[in-house]
Picture (cartoon, rainbow, N blue to C red):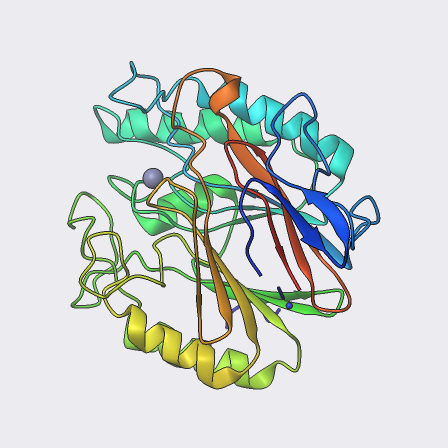
Length: 305
Ligand SMILES: [Zn+2]
């Protein structure tokens, strides 16, 4: 029913550190854009799987509000596309909030069409995670049709790794988001999806990476949290297979480790004006289980082994 589809490491921020005696520099920004993480890992040598990551684009044809510069997402995407052209990821994951609200349903559909057109410049397989802003006025089916994807939660395998995409855009009563029927603070993974996740993780023999929009490493009561995060984490932990969870939603770099699983919140592309404030990354997953996240612009680097 779901696409049957497709592991790990330790956090370090934007700074120099020593790894096996080798100086590792992380977190530099453009124009020295790529491969700043080096040392024990020759990161020019690609991992078993290389993944492009982008989150919280919030594209909309409207003036900036606060720190969110909606129209600039198109230029920022273009820069990410150029980077991915040289990085050649196996696939790119868009971690949610592709669009922002329009004055009407028709305008929101236009926002989606515009951002999807911009994304088409990235010639690699693409996977989408639903964000609350993706399905504000649009129904899930309308959004999924717009991006050419069948399911909102699913899994797949690639080169010795299993990847799971979760959908937390459900109200606490299990109703899917859409047509402005929800509060963004009421994000949940309903029991049906949780059961699917449990079975999916049981069936795979592979180390697993999870992609989600709303964070799973916060207290259940936190405004940004999936409200049943602790239950979801339990399923991830019990499986013994999940090495890392990548997430968005709160727009800021954040990292935590809970019971051996890395939770990495990626910076939002929409935040700040100008390419200096862009944010996206390339994740290399190595055969030995190490993960290296090469962050560009505002996105932090991480290296877990
Ligand atoms: Zn967002």
